[in-house]
Image (cartoon, rainbow, N blue to C red):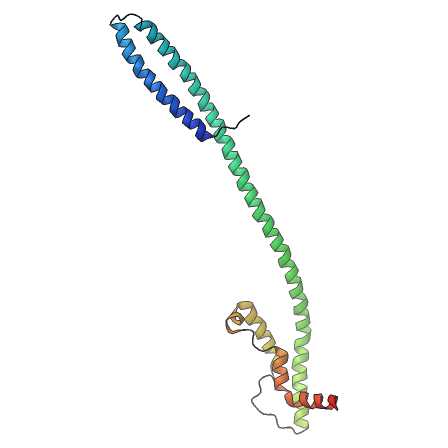
Amino acid sequence: MTIITSSQILEKIGALDILVADLDAEFGKVSTDAVAGAPEAGKKAAEINQRIERLAVDRLILNRALARAQRAEAAAREAKAEAERRKHFDAAKGHAKRLLAATKRIDAAVALITASLPEIAAEELLIRQNLGRAQVNLSVGPMGQMGLAVMAIDKLIRLADGRARLSGPGKSVTEIATSAWVILLAAENEQEAA
């Protein structure tokens, strides 16, 4: 069975209305002739009237078909919209699962960072104390001789809030520590090489 759209039915209704208007005009002329006594005018007026009545039934059928077609089209549009909503909802569910997996990785990293931060601070303090006892004069300027834990947290904050994208990733915490304690690490590397 061929599906007829509401716009096709509306075109049929429009054509039918034009035909009925033309027949109505013709009926008016013929009925005037019938009243004036023209032969066969009464018979022709009755035929036109019957045709107009049949067309009224056809219009009623078309009106009902139009209502059914409009309901079916509305249901199809709603089904399509629901499928689109479902697609986006399912996509959001997939993103939520990936988000949860990422947060689990972050939680593991946070646990590792949480364990490492006190160790970094304690090792920095012990380096400074032991160098002081060894009577090694520390220069005041090298960044990273104290506060590497804070620098690590700041680096994470800059990555999270987007500032790192503007200024670039900068040096890693390891690079800063290596630069800050080059006098100790260079001596260790020389002893390992010998």
